[in-house]
Image (cartoon, rainbow, N blue to C red; front, side, top):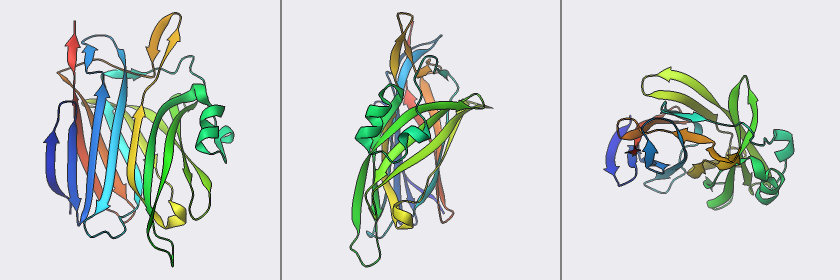
Length: 245
């Protein structure tokens, strides 16, 4: 049973906080800059932070999927943007991956996980997160998320996902990310923080990977976190914007 513990508004985004049977989950989303045209798109970036912890310090439930529906008042532009493949990233540490596919980076962040190996004290591992533009699949923009585990053995973790076009009320894009086991099943994510967005020059003009316009004074995202044991956490996140005329 999911109970809403709080809904906090701040100047640039909404934060959702839930208590899920003693597991505390929070999520924030912010789209910048807030000053956007009422018509026509301008480059933006999306920053999201998800935190998971338990009230009694026990192991949090493992996340199995993160899904987002994103506001339809925008677009994804990959024309002229370099791509990076799974083969190029396989077995790489974060610094090597970023150097090898520098032009394809469309987002960066960090992740943390609670790891409880048999016979060992609980510990926290942390990794940079890097999001790379990958070759499209079925005409859909594709992203590869890269992270690096250190327990129980060093390993690059690669998670590909696609950006799907949808028609669902306020929403025009959908992303579903299937999360792999952490630390061979002995770990659970406690923090996922990333900023997605990139600008570059094309024909002398600055263009953006993610673009948006301001409609109704807000841009909106619907997110759903699903856990391995079957529980889930849904929430609507709204980032205010201002028309630039």
